[in-house]
Image 1 (cartoon, one colour):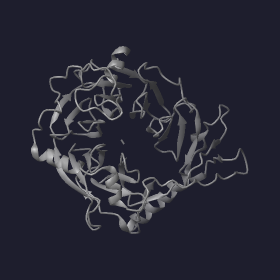
Image 2: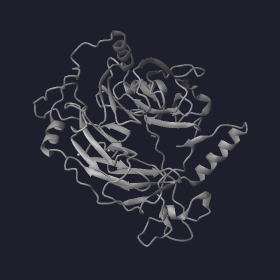
Image 3: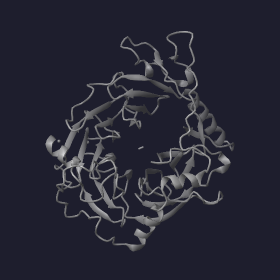
Image 4: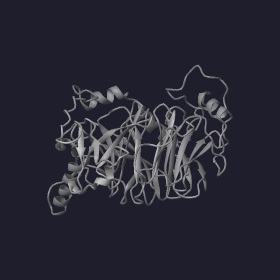
Length: 435
């Protein structure tokens, strides 16, 4: 794991104007020079940090560039490994690349995928893709987060309170042991964008939040993560998000509240209470402005917020009514869209800043399963996204215009994963999560 109206002109001005802190890399330097007045609780980055040792830690960790860090990991390894995908199998029935779905195939019910055509055909086009593979030592993984600049690195949090870094291109023998930071599942994970050696993790029940230092040169017998600093906890935590300037850390969880932390000092800048009617499962900053974020709640709404305004129950920039529980929300890479995912097949996308729902609906069957929680995320190009739900063995690839491009089939992987789990329970080797 891992919800009221707005002035359109105000949104346009707020996003395009310079920010009172550090400007994100993707914000246009030629924007209007007006600067909104900061909130009373907002810290200006020009002020000295209140914790010199904390600042020293961050400066030490931010010194290497992503290129330097990549060279430390492997001198002769390219950052992006992209061999040509295998050709798609031609089935005996249907169109080339289509997948026949039978009720008995690895426990997949054909109704789950009878969404390809309005006639209810039990065929679903399979997107050409590499065969999914199991990643070593990831059997109990509860949460993961890709590194923002090193595409082969994953930050993993497991069900037992351990955090680790996985290089997907390395063998199991080259993996570092995990770091134990708690005793409950780690639901909040985030890498810092401008400090490639700094990460943050959050434990679900206690809400303990720890800043971590990543050391790629650590011995193989030691964890490559070091626990550097603990900050004030956020009980029943379920989400962490850092803004694009690495100034603020946003947290939410099984409550209608949020908290904003100052990354430079580790102090809580603001706690906003009761901003939703039910708990906030996910909260996410946008990608081009350090003040704008969105919250997804089970109260059937997702809300857009601006930290330059007071964060109160009725001061949101915009309320997006989705008509159902919201499991997660995310901005597109260019912040032109917001994608809200709910239960079963419920997906809604909104254009920014008009807040018009686009498209009117996605070509998925009607929602019937109340216990299937959907997650969706944009691809790097911003023109496509992938979406999947619990209890399903496939992942849809969609265009932002609303076209279904096909599925990635995980049926064999899920079966292998289950077999590995059984062997592990009986004293055998470890398993993995689908990569």
